[in-house]
Length: 208
Ligand SMILES: O=C(O)CCC(=O)C(=O)O
Image (cartoon, rainbow, N blue to C red; front, side):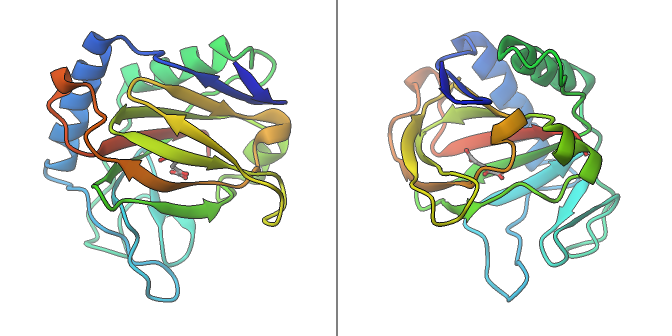
């Protein structure tokens, strides 16, 4: 469903089996040798998610990408799995983003607990070439439903509230690439029981 020019919401895009597989991979990564962590951003505030970047690390102090986590523990960023890149490419293609295909080279994986949230922001730390071409961001959600906020190109523009449920994909590219967005809250207990997940994982795939 196209919710605005360049913005698409695919409900239940991933089957339950695909969600289960992806969830196992997310868990293994976040608990792995380069673990998820709670970033402290410029100004000293702690984010309300546990984050792990793959492919390139997003530094919350500089808002720049880098190969190792210089704002946290200095560990090198884990690679972005090839089959995750393919998944992101397929979702972007399903949105009809054929003129501006996504060759993701990074993914920000966020875990939201019951009190998880993310303030509205633009994803604008990718390269000028990627942003000006409108290369899409592909977001995939697993677990508890999030109240997703999708605004306009200016912070003061009206914001639409969209529930992002487990297995949903959301794509924003082209004219929507720089729209403000965020997560106001997580709805506890809404994950499919088969997943055995409390909270929510979100993966955003981007092309630097
Ligand atoms: O969790 C979400 O659905 C949005 C995540 C997000 O805005 C981001 O990673 O920049």
